[in-house]
Length: 275
Image (tube, rainbow, N blue to C red):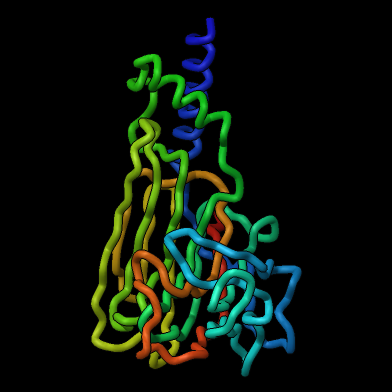
């Protein structure tokens, strides 16, 4: 009976999702949320500013609110060399968890990035809620040899990296999608794009379009990467941050100048509206 129950639940869930994604008129992109950062202070009805120590990826920063503020019509994320808690660097991270979480959309972020060894600015999307019950059912199906009832390209964990740049490679942009298949396999699709300019010299427009059948990345209107497998169909919230140090960017050294500034002119979010 248990085997029949989880089989029926999984099958019903995926049939419902499939029906919702077929035969739809996509409609036009319409603005549903924005922050132009024109005020004197950050709008805390839109953003959560974190106080957080993190050792993930061997990062060296402590995120504190003092490093996130408005400057000359921009959101500024500052990264500094100073002792705080058990860390020797501070930086900023903010997100829209529980304030803005959407399923599908177009995300526009116009930003000027920090530069230097060990800096790691990023814009990314993360699930508002992970479906732990569904994950358990999927793992149970795998354990019982029923993988065939689980569609291969339906993820249970997702992270959409709209933009990542490593401070020592200021002309190189990474567009990446991380997910876990329903077989429990970690997967990703990533594109490394080398520009003929530095992303730290001026503001550039980073755009992600997430639709039921594809995710697309753009820089200044140029299509950089497209993903069509493992597309998520659940609400995600937006994260903006600059990490310092870590296993991927490496750590700051004597060439890294502090403080560093990560300026964001605006964030705009659109969704398809069917007339």
